[in-house]
Length: 87
Image 1 (cartoon, rainbow, N blue to C red):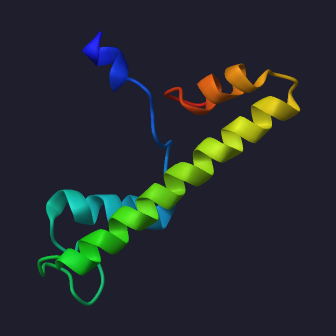
Image 2 (cartoon, rainbow, N blue to C red; image 1 turned 90 degrees about the vertical axis):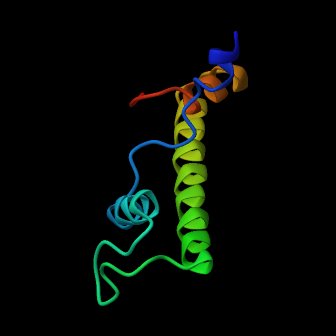
């Protein structure tokens, strides 16, 4: 049952900038640009986290509104906006 708690997708495929930010956070260093190879500061890591969360919120809201426009109920739209993959 604990597995179900974490099975919902929080964000779908991010934008090009978000992809770079995700790589930076995973490596904990700058992976491109003039600071390439230098360690991320706490501030820079926080900026990347915030940007990625905004991408998540935007993608989920897009899928939710699209499902409502297709005539789905609010419960169905919420479930669709949290599922993995494209729908």
